[in-house]
Length: 338
Image (tube, rainbow, N blue to C red):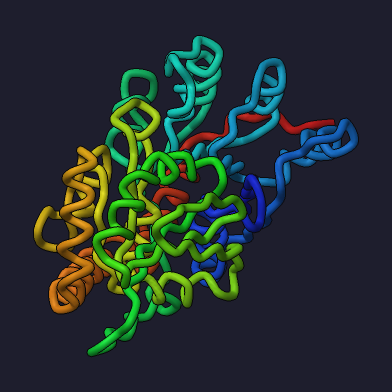
């Protein structure tokens, strides 16, 4: 079985966690895996389309081909497997109106032209089912060999509220600045650490700005005492697959989150974290964890149990391999190029 994996980027979180980390396992099962970025230039597209007949499956991570490229892809590719982990059929949370006819049309075309679809959560699966019954959920997962349990200090001078993510999502966190200011006033021990490439400042709470790096990603997470995942209740957020929470819990960090979408599946309120909707709820939940180190450890350990059960590559890699086998059983559709 020869599979071409098209990804967004080798340092893009979704590419790393939904494709790249599975390659060693798939190769150990005999899959000939080739990973490539999406073609951009005319030369790259010419080479890509002319080589499609070499592969049994073309695995597309998140992006949708527009017409007429999608039509050409369908004619040339033997089998298409589409994987997505965002509400790509809607505009993001910063848009005034989430509805986009262009996004919806391209999503529908992509799904209908795919032999199988892997969705990152149940909401995304529900968007596929009316269009294509060949869909299964594989959640975003972490490598449990890489994500070790953090050390819980008996005494510590500072308590770190942590957030990790890309610049496209930091607006969720920045909306919470008034909450952080109040936390800083109530607890001089509290500090905010942002692991990203974009930052903001606060006046009354110390803000640690750390550029993300692959080498220090897990160590940065282990340095958090409380993990943050604020969202808004909209279609874009319903499609999120909770990587931040999975990362926090993977190293044993308790979470305070907005109870939206997959957040409600990952966090059990009062067990491995807290829900918070209003500014007052955020402030009180955070303050209760800041003041109680035993509760932080207890919730952090419970969160890790949750992740190890369902959200590791050891659990999800065999499921991906099984899907590849099932897709291979489908008759090849593409025509060989001349």
